[in-house]
Amino acid sequence: MSPYRRPDGATYYVDMRWRGFPRLKLATGTTTKSRAEAMEHMLAGLKRNGRRDLLGLLAARRLTLPDLFEAYEKRGDELEQLKARAESPVLGDLVDRWLEWLRSPAGVSTRTHRRYAERTVQQYGVSWAGFYSVLPQGRGARLSDLTRGFVLDYRRARTRATGGAKRVAHPDRPLTGATINRDLAALGAFLTWAREVEGLTVERPTLPRERESSGRERWLSGDELAAFERACPTGWWPFFAALFFTGARLGEMQGLRGADVVVHAKRLTIQEADRRLKTRESVRDLPISEPLERALAGHLVRFHPGPGDLVFPGEYQSYAAVRRAWDATCSAAAIVGARPHDARHTFAVHAAQSGVPIVRLQKLLGHATAAMTMRYMKHAPEAYLSEDGAKIAAHMAGTTDAEATARAAAARAGMRAG
Image (tube, rainbow, N blue to C red; front, side, top):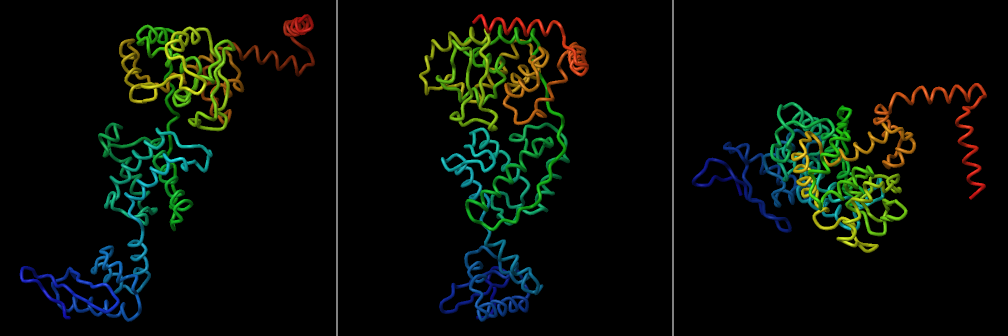
């Protein structure tokens, strides 16, 4: 059948029928009959050459006839590249399946070998909302569209504008280098899953990192901490006190179980079973200081958690609720620019200022490397410099500090007496 035009239009159509092949009733996108006939001849040639794959993609509307004809005319690799793009899965559905997998029992990180925290999954979802805003087809884009060119376009699009950083409400506003790096980490995790779990052929583009700032170091002074406690609602102070006086991460504290808190031993334990750990070094014991013991006393009586029960159940498990309580308290205490994670910074800075050695502070914070802890050492008091220097010089000279010797002798005597 020759190309034809509908009564109400000027564009030509083709209608191809062969036994054993799907019917192809397609728009040519041209008003020129000779070009439409060339497309018809191309289809007949594909049929003779057994290209059922391309004809099937046309029938399924995953390829358009004008696009196929343009690639066919170039006589290069364009035809196979076009086929590969058409066969590539749609990103929206694939990403949704990935996010579901992350929340499932099978969702285990290949790097940490741990389940993904819900906040991580939510962050990945936010990252993909940003990717969709840059991809021309949005959720309808295909896996093969995640090319090096897309990564470059994304970085340009997300860094060149001016404005705030409320990325969900204002997706067109710029992102910091740290946020872009988190997004690219989400992209890398998705591509790894697509290849290793789904068995898809993935062309992995280079994911260059942006330069990041040295990071926020907002921490509360002693006066600010006292004001925070006075302004904090009674029901929320035990939770925030646990963050301030242990330096634990928010997710670690939310995962704390009754068996992890041993008040009489003045110790709480961050366990592997909590499944909210960032690194292997996060498994650790933390001190229960006297202020924290006082704060926890009423809370433990109120909830009386069993060994397997959450110490902070209900609304404490919601980051939105935690943030509301934190912001309201900071507002009432006239504390500006502080976030819940700054409770961890507060613990670390005060620990450094009190002279806690870096190796012990690293253990308390659950850092994988000492380099991560070093950021707090600039807060260590300078008075310790001369003391440390004297100890080193005495040791190098083969002498010892008399006071230190006396303390050691007294300690040994006490041990023998015990």
